[in-house]
Length: 163
Picture (tube, rainbow, N blue to C red):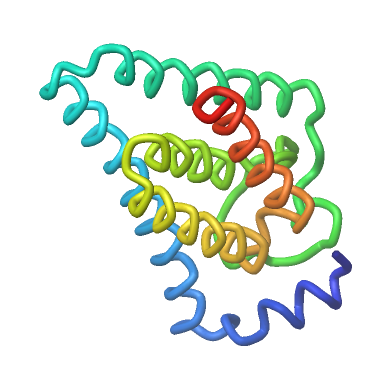
């Protein structure tokens, strides 16, 4: 992604209303997904499905730690660091852009839901695609960051839940 590409992609959202839409959508989708996950855990606890409960706790947790450690070691710069752009989503973090942990988290939680309740997993996967778009247009991730986050979340979910 170049500065010109970013400016072109983000131009529809550069006004006050557009920026508010991006910021609100980012926060709302993040909140919905991260509230849904403990609800799923509570449901599994309430129904006494201890094996699935342990998997739904351990798989995202272990995967999240691995991705976080990788990001800390790899520490790729963010678009606003390299391209001298003003991101729509305010962030002052340096590095740790690859892979996108927001997108990864949505996809690993989506895969967890897919394992338990496929329709909800599909909805969360669609939200993950929207989140990836928002994180790029918002100027806090490169396209490769969000693709890597999504693929990593899907592969971790497949590895633990499907295989």
